[in-house]
Image 1 (tube, protein in one colour):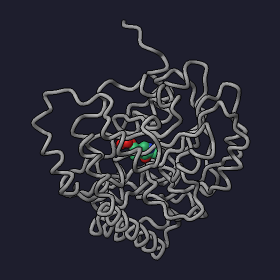
Image 2 (tube, rainbow, N blue to C red; image 1 turned 180 degrees about the vertical axis):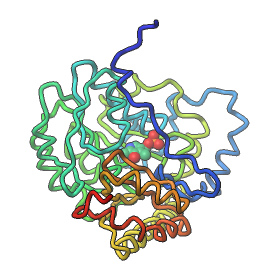
Image 3 (spheres, rainbow, N blue to C red; image 1 turned 120 degrees about the horizontal axis):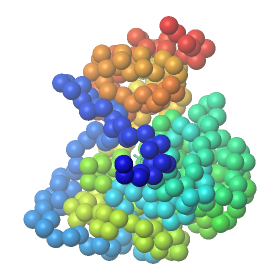
Image 4 (tube, rainbow, N blue to C red; image 1 turned 90 degrees about the vertical axis):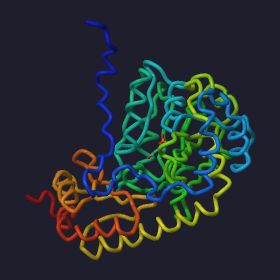
Length: 360
Ligand SMILES: *Cc1c(COP(=O)(O)O)cnc(C)c1O
């Protein structure tokens, strides 16, 4: 028998958001429902004949474009094959066996997986009763072994955000040698006025990094490109641990074209935000219990009823993401897709009300 690392075998195999059969709609992976913009398709088509070559390893054009957009310098930008790879780089660059990586739970399922791959120990702090980060409890969970903290804002899967006041109080309690990563995968959808902004935090604290992706608002999930903005010493470490040539040439050009089309993309984001409100209101009218979401999905605290609600939605041709016995996350799709969710709502509304759980 080949000797495999024991810690790796503790990692659950990744379950992709269900693949739609027949005419079911896929609202399980927080993807953008709209196809890429014509200018993005053109950029990809233009470079498709060059894929026999390796991409530019340091992607200087894309790095410069991101730096310009985020008003930082090139040495502040690290790229990866999706921000999930950049999250892995951040962990590898800071944490190994015996070190702790701290984050809220439930949150992005990649955090515990990537932490275990690096041989470090995940420390998961339960969310508050209203599904937000419990920052005081997270600060209290810091030990001399803590190397990295993820703050997922808005949080996947619950859609809650951290206010800038809460974040500042938290940072006052965190040692400056611990890296705090603000994961802003859903930042474009966040309309909350008092939310902490990753870029402000980056400028306010020497130990903050910001994580962004092209997969959600920009609609490039299939091309795999994301980035971190951080201090140059951190970026230097990230570049050392990055997968060589991890960001393909097509991904680089598509990302550049997307940044050039931010106005058009913002219009699409606005549509999704308007649909989020319509879905939230419709679910409440059907007497579902749910909080406001600041991301491109809604979260229903279905607890032990999660498998049942998943089945009811499936019966209406909707694939959503059930998270254990915690709840169910439904991506905001195109209007006709969201209509299916609202049509199903009266059948599962009672299962979303906490006071009545569990319902049998
Ligand atoms: C979707 C998501 C990402 C982005 O992943 P990519 O690898 O860039 O596609 C990162 N963080 C969170 C919290 C997410 O939900």
